Length: 135
Image (cartoon, rainbow, N blue to C red; front, side, top):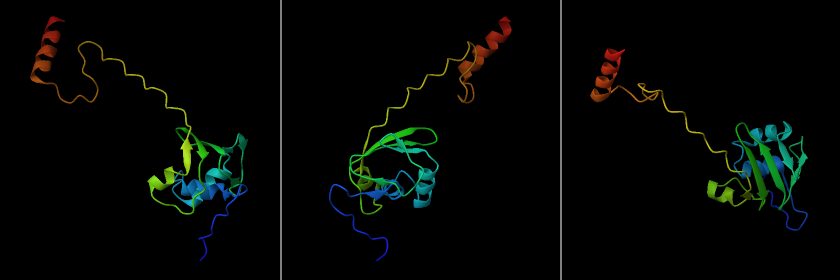
């Protein structure tokens, strides 16, 4: 049956990078995986690739620049199908740097409520009224 190719065993065994990205659930579809590979956003062992047909082998390190983050994945297995997420996670070891810590937004100035806090409570309303009267 087409598409059910067996992965050859041995040290030289490999898989197309677009197919592996699809199996590992980095890309939603094989077409998007091909576009990602040809756009130059992927490096295999620090070498920039421009073709979706480049071969990925076990032990290779892929650096993938996505829209809002950078993924660094070490290939642990090649896979034979696009399975569930738990199965896809076994295909790689995630070496990505942790996201930078988010800075807390500055507190609102005195007498103002935080944005999105909803309507003022009765207590808040009385405080607002006393502030207006003292000005």
